[in-house]
Length: 261
Image 1 (cartoon, rainbow, N blue to C red):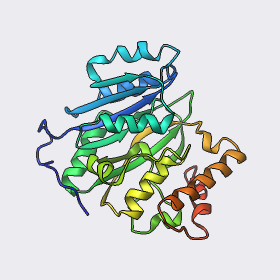
Image 2: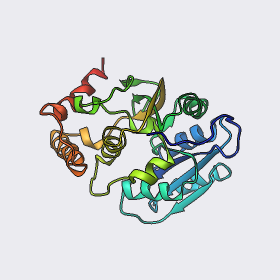
Image 3: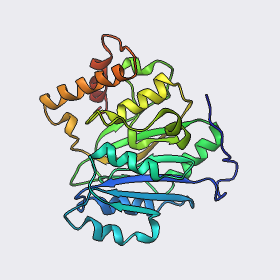
Image 4: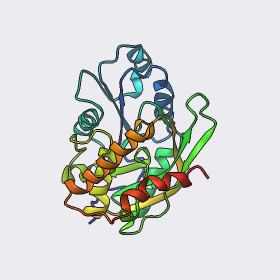
């Protein structure tokens, strides 16, 4: 199924994209994120910042970019996915994207390219590729997450796109729901599984690296964390009444090995 809205004129003020960033004690990295969104050459960006009541100087850094921020909230919340859902509720754009406070866009044309792909394809969602970079040296690429073009059923083979490089029409969230807060680390996987594999929204692949993400994700920090992440991945299928193949949840982390090559 395809949701429709007018993307014929990219300068039309009605064609808005909401970019949501959540923060909590992100002073070390948040400025790169803010600069990368503020520097985009696409004119109609609704930039939303959801802060979890940071105790460092995150808010001082955010205030420097207040003329580029449409909506800002700083208050205690239930955690990562509660904050993302709050941002979705506040969003008024035709398209919604997420950029976390330790990630940033590769160049100033990322959003223009994404919106152009929506216009050309008429798809419900657009996704691209992502670089994992060294935490201390963001010019050093550690892993390359190259998504490739989606074919129906690829989630069964352990496929998923990188969430910061995934943009969906707001109607997808209205119709199919937001992040499932029962999950602690796999809600981004679950929502894309739900949208793409279960409800079969239409997709367009933008074959370019769009985002740089600093290394250091908790789900892969230890064997124990990887086991917990695998259990959550399994729960994502169960919550949707779906059944993975016997190898699906083994292939998913194994795919990451190829990203180092």
